[in-house]
Length: 363
Ligand code: SAH
Ligand code: SF4
Image (tube, rainbow, N blue to C red; front, side, top):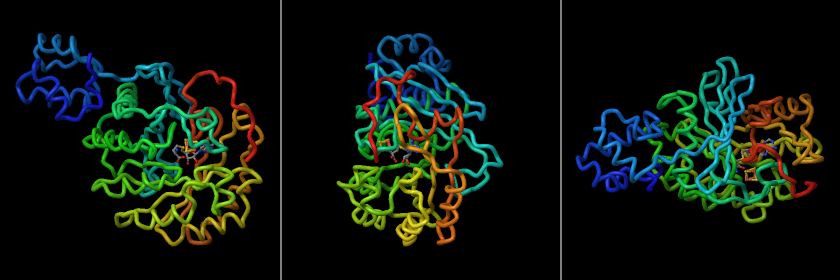
């Protein structure tokens, strides 16, 4: 059985040639898979029945199995998927109401939209101190089919159509350590989500940033900083040893930004670690030379996985945000509370029940 999901249009045409010889058949199949979110050839009603049956004998549309869905009161819903080898990943369906400021699309503040947060790896080797995915350890790269599969399975479950959602790579894994498959997935979704509506969030993998920079149709870039000097950042994000701030910012200066666009800098605020006004001033000074905006993420706590790490009080978060804004850098605060926090950044585990953590680790 061959999986059609993840194959390029040309490869789909080649694959189905014997069963569906007319050239337009491959385009029909692709339309069913991507636009109409078909999970089965039987759904492809404009194909002759015999052809549907012949396709089903040789091929599958390898959408990931939905193990569980965790809806929250605000419309956000976490999906736990199982992949063909048993690996598990999570993705999140997010609706932002008209009134709420839109952190996934600050270019058009106040717009109501759906955002799909996708995973790129089944774990993460980068091992940031504040991230549950990182605490769980490394996991394999997802294939392009597994990446688009998360999107299509959610689109099917939530019944939204093409061009109705933004995509952010802020789920499990470091997308720029799997850049080839992320790029393939973006190409496959090209008719579905324009690159302007896609944001790739990276811990600062310089070669990956450079690879994306060379592409004619680029997604938006978000860079997770969480420290505005090398000492603080290395303590929180060990990848800073490999790509220290000077090297990272040299690459970001070369990033070809379209007019009116900005690079997003994500900064996870952790009480007593990186939340002082001096840190805010350092952050603003670091990012101000570039067209940038800052997205502050008060830590999503986990007693079990991130013992000892606390979210600062709202007063501290607000003072930090004000200091960054006063220094001339646009800033938004991403708040997730209660149930929603369990489906939020850094909280995706790829399993329903937590296993034994690797043990506490101080920043
Ligand atoms: N690996 C990529 C994308 C996935 S993480 C990256 O690091 O950018 C997505 C975002 O979640 C990052 O900005 C990361 O800093 C943030 N994050 C991780 N753990 C978090 C936590 N416990 N609370 C809040 N944000 C967290
Ligand atoms: Fe990996 Fe991003 Fe988590 Fe760091 S924050 S461990 S890079 S998923």
